[in-house]
Length: 554
Image (cartoon, rainbow, N blue to C red; front, top):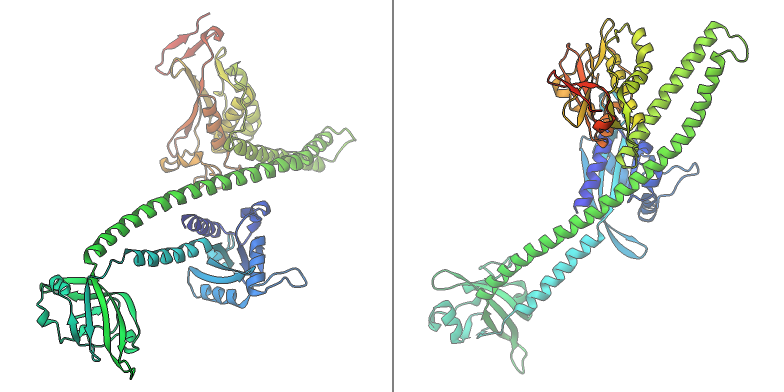
C-alpha cells in the first residue's frame, strides 16, 4: 500500500512542477511504457499523455477508442471527476471493481488538477490521474474474512448445558450447569423468557423482542448469547437451537437446544487474535518494505538507464552539429573564403560564442550524470599547480577585462606539486574563476592564493570583491541547478547551476573538497582543497595557513 502512496505523491510533486507544459519531459516514453494506467488531460478532456496500460484500461472498462485523428478523450465518468475537481477539490480518490479479460479486478484511482509550468497565478490547465491495481489487496481482505469465519467454527467448544422453551419462548427446562455458570438458582430461571435473560450478539432486536431467525422459526447453531450473571458480569454463551413441532399436528411448540460458556475461550481467542494481527502486521510491513526496496531499485535502474541513453544520444546528436558550427564560424572569422563585412564578422563571433556556451552546458549536464551514476573516471597525476592556474586564468582573462576587473592577483607560486586529475582540476578552477568574474561588479578584483592546510593537503582559494552570498544560501549553492546569484544580482546571470555541484563532487573524488566563506557586500572566498603529491616530487616552498613556510625536501 505504501508504494501506491509513493506513486500518488510522485504524481502530486510532478503536477506541482507543472506537468501540463511539457509532460513528456517528466514521463519519457520508455518510462511511460512501464507505468501503470496513468494519464494527463487538458481542460477539454483530451488526453495529452497516457501510458499504454491506461489506453487498454479505458478501452476495456469505458469502451473508449481513439477518434479518426488519433485523439483520445475522457469518458463521461472521468469528466464528472474533472468537474468535481474544478469546484476546488484538491484531489479525488476512488475504488472501482471492473471486469477485465473475464476476471474481476479492483482498482484504486487518484485524480488531481494540473498547472502549466510558469502559468500566471498557477492557472489550472488540465488534469492528471493514476489507476493502481489493488486486486491482490482486495482478495486478501476477502480471504482474511473467510479465514476468520473458519477460525470461528473451529474454536467453538462442546455444549455443556441443555435448555427448552414453550411456544412463547419461556424456559420450561434448563440443566444445572447454566445455574452454576450464572450463579443463579434454577427456580429463578425456569418460567422466564429466554430473551429476557440475554440477547444474541450483534442483534438489533435487543432485549425487547425475538430475533428474526426465531420469528421465522429457523434453526441456529453456535450463536453467541450474551447474558449477565448474578454479579452483573456478562457471560458469553455459545447457543444452538432447533424448533420443536407437535407430532401429528405439526404445530410449533417451542425451541430445544444446548449451550456452552465460551467466555474464557473468547478472551483467550481475542488475545491470540491481537497477537496474530500484530505478527501479521509486522510480517506485512516487512514484505512491503522489501517490495518498496525492489520497486525503488528497479525504478532507479530504469531511470538511470533511460537518462544515460538519452544523454549519450544527445551528446552525439548535439556535439556533432555544434562542432560544425564552431568550425564554420572560426573559418569565417579567419576570412579563409574572402573578406567579410564587419557586421557579418561580428555575427559569426556571436554564433561561435553561443555554440561554445551551449557545448559547455551539454558538458556540464553529462558530467553531472556521470558523477551521479559513478561512471566518471579520474586519472590523478603529480602536476604543477601554477600551470593549471595559468591555463584557467587564460579562460577568464578576456571576460574579466571586458567586465573591468583587476585580476593581477590571480597568480600561483611556482613549484607547488599536487596529486590530481589535470583536466578535472582545471575544470574546477575555471568554474570557480568564472563565478568570481560573473558576480563581481565593474572595478572589483579577482585573485587566487595558495596555503598548505596540513601535511597532506593544499588549499587553493579563489577570492573576489563581488556581491557576496547570504549565509542562508551558502549550502544551497552546491545543489544541482541552483544559481548562486539568484535573488542577489540586479540582473540574471547565465549558467546551468551545475558548476559548483560538479566542482565539489570532483574535488571529493580526488580526496579534497570545495568550501565557501562569504558575506553580502564583502565578496566571496571559494577554497579548493587537494592532495599534495609525495615530498620527493615537490621542489619549492608552499606558504602554510599559519603564516609560516613549508620547504619541500629534495
